[in-house]
Length: 88
Image 1 (spheres, rainbow, N blue to C red):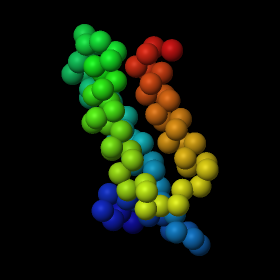
Image 2 (cartoon, rainbow, N blue to C red; image 1 turned 60 degrees about the horizontal axis):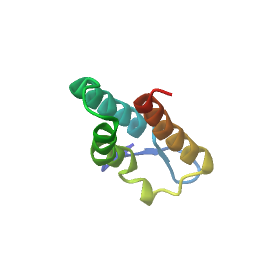
Image 3 (cartoon, rainbow, N blue to C red; image 1 turned 90 degrees about the horizontal axis):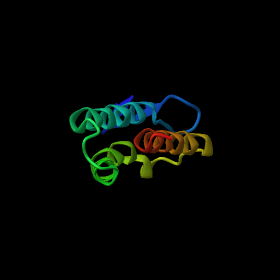
């Protein structure tokens, strides 16, 4: 079920899905990379990602008690974005 930007998963206990948020983050980051096309410095791109893309993945996560595995998935997503930015 989708409610106020949060996907609630059917389960025995209350759970939220972060898959849509991760997909939206990748879309937003790729849009920034496409527009800037690697002409701006890494600091400018990092600032754009922090200001425009990180709120996409963090929206509504504070209302959900996320298990450790889900937090690790969000952390991996952010690390993957930074690895792509710094070409590592």
